[in-house]
Length: 556
Image 1 (cartoon, helix red, strand yellow):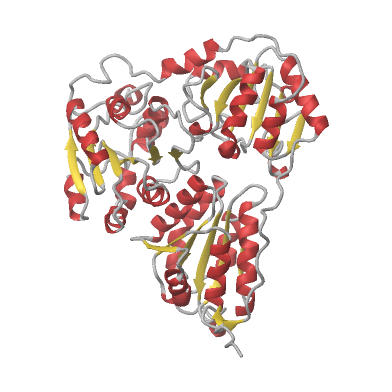
Image 2 (cartoon, rainbow, N blue to C red):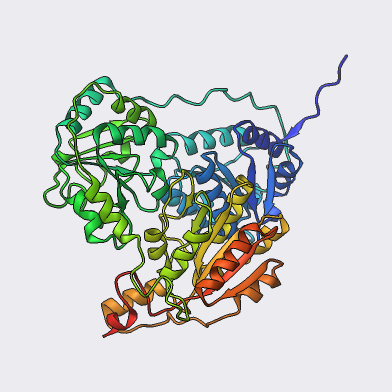
């Protein structure tokens, strides 16, 4: 008689559920309240446990991994301090609609509710920043709860879920959890009546436009076909510039912060705006003004397609809202049997192209420190077009958003939450997920020093990524806001210039300091071909606070 299999722990059953669902990586700072979970992941052949330098970095890594691959990643941290540090990354996943599973180690069951060591009510803490947060009360329910968490994270509008687990549950032996269904849940198509109405509306419009968001990540080909079918100008939502090829003649621009007026003109004058896979955030809508909130746009000229019914019409009036998968809906529209007249959208594309070119005497002026435009131009000269760019928050990003052309899919990892410290951890995750791709983190000195210690993680894991730091000695975005609103600044000057290249070398990475455009080209070329992580410390001019103005002009 064959021996029965050894009983598994709740942690082992949970990891089996994760692996069976396609989860490959867990990012963590190890803690005493989930010892068996970390061990089970480490021992599983199909998963990788990545130890990070800070829980904030672990959260950003899990979010970036899932955003890039479309498959949930896991972050696991301990109670109290660990859970608090992780929250920024989880909030980013919520605002960015990124599927992610978070395990929060909790105090032992017998101690709950007594304000035990590092105890926090984790369900209450995480409920506002997740799709679902729960505390597991029994070991034999942990695998079941994990399966539910994965389902919730990946259906409807994707997002993070948080599972708090008392420390004494992970090691208990439990019965095997039933195998998960093999096929993913069906994604709804566009109804025939909706397709006919939308196609007729787009065909009859004189100036149609499309706003495409993160929901179209897996539908690039369908988006291009639908745009070409109706000859509609295509805008990408805030920090989703890679969902549509920027060099396509129908591309009209990026609806980001400080969007130039010439770029917005086509959208403002559109008589039919189709929003696909975008939640119409404050930034994308230019403070809830477009589409539908301005003139001549109106609710009768806006339609929306989204996988989540709660997003349809949530922040802008629409004449038609359809709950459907973006790829299936766009494919159906592209095949609609309607006559579409010839349209000319070249002016919209030219208006956007004009904003991507550095003004005279900025891109390669020979001045020191470098103008931010010169750094972006150097990146365009030396980096491969399909490089994955992870970008941080900061005033430098305005130049990056305008100057870098996203020609290939899944080449931009950027937080719509505006969280600082994102770029370096995101680059670590991107290089783990796509080891053959060039990965470049772009940050200011403020964001780089929040999570720059994750360079050590990259070195330890043998990840040859590149970090480009715009060092201007300022919390530049806040300095710009203060100067514009108050005419003076407060608490925005940070020490500089710092020897960030030496900092990188101290973490085991390569480091180089750049003060001229010529140096930048050489250093970036070397960094791309290096066999270890490289930080490029570019000294930039804090006076160039945005593409439109200078600090002196704002302060005066």
